[in-house]
Length: 185
Image 1 (cartoon, helix red, strand yellow):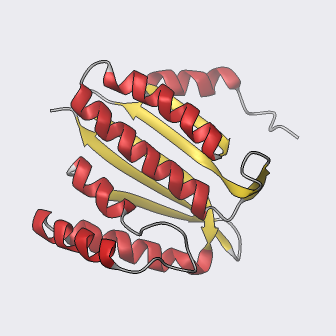
Image 2 (cartoon, helix red, strand yellow; image 1 turned 60 degrees about the horizontal axis):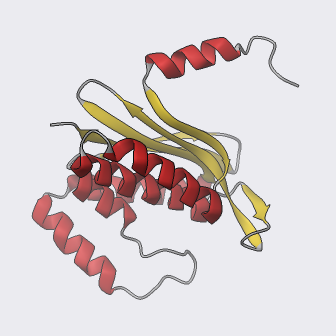
């Protein structure tokens, strides 16, 4: 049942006030990802191609994180397997863009994710470069897909720290929100 206090107009107004460029909640399949990415690329490359490429790269990385790591899943006919469900958002402020994702993760994994983000945020440019190279040389993880470099790459591209928030959902799951700010100048 829909919350009777939910007002679509107010939701739309908030998106307008906060200059939301793209907002999506649902199954983040590879097919959808390619369509959203194409739309995002066209919108973000118009004004400043350099920042547009960075927005696009970070958007893809956050989308892939939802696709691969969300514990909330739905079956994708195109992929023939369950894929992640989550929320993706790109918004614009006067001096920056914000690219964000939210998805469910196991509560038991939140400490590891937060520690990794804090460690990455603590590194300077040279430290990020060295850590990136080190992670690229590591063997593929069997318990989790991906090259383990996405968070590092987002910080390197944006020049800003990863912003993370964890909201406990129930006794076994949490909602993880990751945001990356890209300065316009």
